Image (cartoon, rainbow, N blue to C red):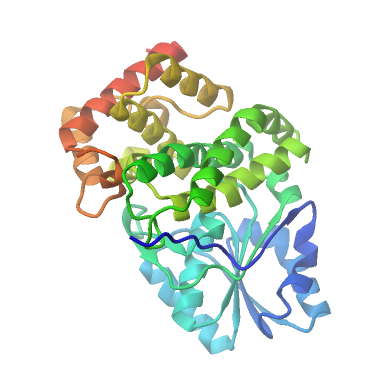
Length: 366
């Protein structure tokens, strides 16, 4: 198999860079469609429109309707085409960005990824996670092109609710364990090849950065402060995790996340919170030693990530519920099959129960 590494066209990060977007995007087109939810647009629309205007771009603003669904992609694509937009700017969280990426591909135009929270590794990827209008995971859409520009304003990241930041840590924490599993099994990564050594090392750097800076960074974000640790973890959550998962590969953690979305009681939990439960499940599934699993649980607790099923809404896990999760996690084509051994639903169900018990034991919850 061929080794493949892919990335976005450029990456820009720093305090107040949203007001500089025009200088970084002016070569991409003449008319931008800015997509974000009501809250995000209230934060960024004025600065983005002013910067685009200063650099000769027109702007059409449209509100995103919560779910990255096929229906929403079709709605925004039609609106963008009617407006004559040749650049799509997705602003906000992962679902808005995934929708914007899909719209850009549908309309054959440039795409700017502008996360206002460091909650997932979606901003850098050529991938959209598509959900039903009700919020259940449906499928991955793999795109031919990456975002032309990823622009991350760390003042916005630090000013957002801390839960988004910690959720990004949960998503990024999985990157090393999944990329390493895929590397050991010579599995295909998300861009159609084997992982390069560079992708494998970037995934490891993501993990190391989180372990070194995450606790301090969370404290800073709780006070709306931008520190060097906030910059480091924002880069880990966004760039390192994005490159690490896509060019390194996914494995059990995200497959378990996808299974967990099948239970309505988990829908209030963020992507990264569910992924963190998936990470602990993967560690048990792979047979990591007790001390290491407990260490990861303790780190998770230090940054306020859930480590039990009740922490993501499953208060009384009936056997049938976990069977649903395990069956979905092991569906044909799921990334759990990138593990370096065969995985069955029964193994996943047992690992879920064991990870939950360890999480309850370490956290002291009942």
